[in-house]
Amino acid sequence: MEFSNTLLEQALCLKPQERFSLVDSLLLSLDEPDKEIDEIWAIESEKRLIAYRSGKLKGIPFEDVFGEKI
Image (cartoon, rainbow, N blue to C red; front, side, top):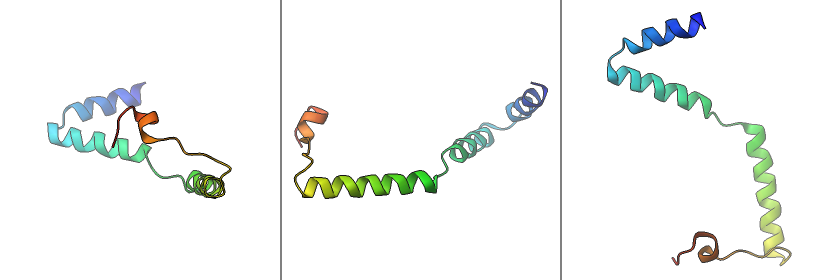
């Protein structure tokens, strides 16, 4: 990729702190919230909470999940 190589060459000429800032910004851009997925999870978590409170769903003790006591 010509375009990518040019960008890479330019990025490698940056000072270490500037490269870190660039990488950090790129990574953050990949982790943007997705409102649709957030809404789906909000609905699902509400369903699970209702099922738990009504006794239709049982919880799993912390110790069983993580293998340690709190």
